[in-house]
Image 1 (spheres, rainbow, N blue to C red):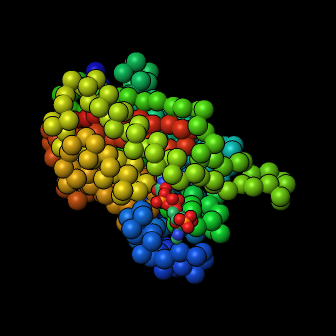
Image 2: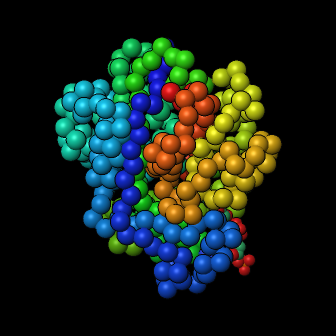
Length: 317
Ligand code: UT7
């Protein structure tokens, strides 16, 4: 038994912030941001929350799968930017969409969170505890970004993506997973919790070069491990849907894997880095644009704060 993605959905805030807009905030240029990151614009929440964006993405994933909220068994929201510690965003989503019988909880593995959520849903469902799940990545990073730090504020955006997964006997669905964490390097990408102390630094801090090195070294190895575990070769893979952090990172990974860059779709120029939401949003766009074909072998892979990283392989239905 395995699980398959039976529906996808996403939700982006309406407000667009361009690189030109950022030129008004920090000493940067549209040219620098495009060349070093590939990003042209990103979405910024205005009133939307992690829970409201996640709920909209879930409703769209359910509609895409032809399923009802009241039949959902499990809701997993991966997020590192919830508005509230309690209740968790997943329980708020449960209430908004009316998924009365679902078990709901959040998990935080930063940009790898959606992948870790998929592996968690896979484990629950193949163990026989549940039959289906909504797995969501949702972020409102704009509220934890320091808008005076040009090293980070140019990168991030807000949004949510969701998939509805269910048990299947195959041949479609998930084949292999690989995951890892390296807590000893946690300080290269960090953010403190909000407190009552106005002096407290509550914004994202990043050593960009260290994260870049980590991603370009670790992600190719992790993808190879997941592909090996699936008893496939890299040549069998039709699409690599990677965490959208930087087009240079994606190009480096494609080169190291000796795979044509056309196998690596991107939406980063339009939406920036939305942490846990990047992979499910891109997957939903590909699905709705008719770019996913039955039988295609797809790799999903992400990396981020923790440090954490993960990859999985699936056959599209
Ligand atoms: O989901 C995971 C999240 N994190 C990431 O994916 C981050 C991975 N890292 C990166 O994407 C890149 O390291 C960055 C895009 C963040 C930075 O690019 P870089 O090529 O590593 O630049 P750098 O930090 O080495 O900085 C080069 C120069 C510096 O100036 P000096 O010291 O050479 O005079 C920076 O001060 O560029 C300067 N700089 C900027 N200039 C204009 C840094 N940020 C900016 C900026 N605009 N926004």
